[in-house]
Image 1 (cartoon, rainbow, N blue to C red):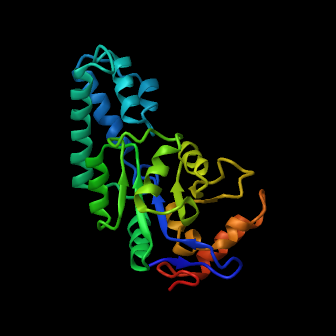
Image 2 (cartoon, one colour; image 1 turned 90 degrees about the vertical axis):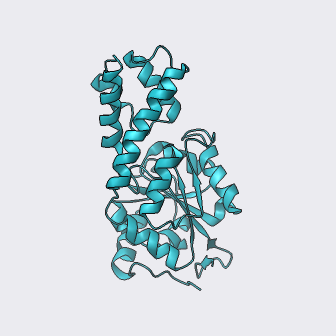
Length: 259
């Protein structure tokens, strides 16, 4: 079912919400940091704090390069790097499966969108098995998952979100992305997809195709599907005020003009 948003432009239709995963739907970064430190040390490496802090949002290739920087493997392309990454991913997957670190609001908003017929996708640099574990924890409501194993590049490359749009059989104009990072927002905006960014401020303040909300718990179907923000002038002070108003007056699970 498509959700058509009225009234100002009859053709404005949002059919899908594309979710970033880590930092948006959940926070598994501590799991990655701890597994990386433990496994690289066990392999004879020195995982300095400066190396570990660069893990946040890293692609699979970048993690392997960082393993090589610690000295745990001779080179990121060496088979030993693949084996070590697999061991780290095993550790993370086990912890995610045992206790998914979902952020407040994740189950509510993904369930609400599923109930009103909006397609959803996860677009993440994490390995597929971890993405699928999170998808299961959220009730398997995702029509598409694009992962770090798919060869679709890494954000801010436009390809991850372009791949999700293509797999859904939609156009960028029919989608909205939810992201927490500037790199992820840049990936989405390079495709012309509107973005709801989790955080105190917009990464690109002059961009009218991006709005910011304080946290995931603030996101409702109305926030994602309401046309008014996307028509607001760049730099308009009204976007944040209207977002707050929408959160107050529209209950989760409802959407304007839904049918």
